[in-house]
Amino acid sequence: MWGWIVALISGALMSIQGVLNTGLTKQTSEWVANSWVQGTAFIVCLAAWLIKDRKSFGSLFQVDSKYMLLGGVIGAFITLTVIVSMGSLGPAKAALIIVVSQVAVAYLIELFGLFGVEKVAFQWSKCVGLLIAIAGIMIFKWK
Image (cartoon, rainbow, N blue to C red; front, side, top):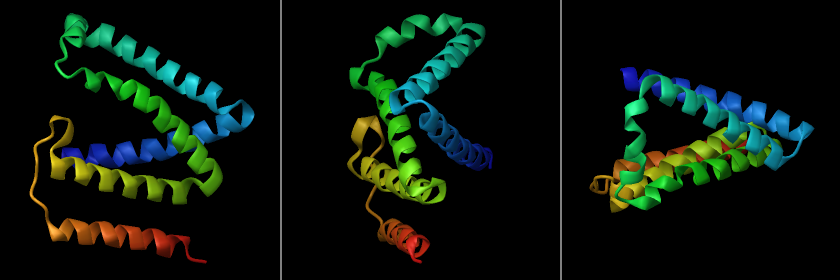
């Protein structure tokens, strides 16, 4: 149950953040807004790290798969693409397409066992669910 609550909060925060970032971009620029978002996130995370978990500092340099260190780089492009898509599509349509894309890519990651994720067996029900979600985008877009 806790995972559901956290996921719902995460989705709500992502939507709110996307709208705020898009508004900030309209008054500055894409990279200024992105830098602000990533920079303030860095400060908050650094403060939390220093307060809560100072002992784990060296563990960052012991990560086996170095590609796992690319999350921040990818995060910068996530922020940028959310800003651009919300600015051109509107928050609801952009969020819907983003979430369906997340589900599709996440399922492919699971199917192929990429990035150290445990491989799962193919299930038609998940493909049908994804197709229903894609149909939902079409219905949502329909005027």
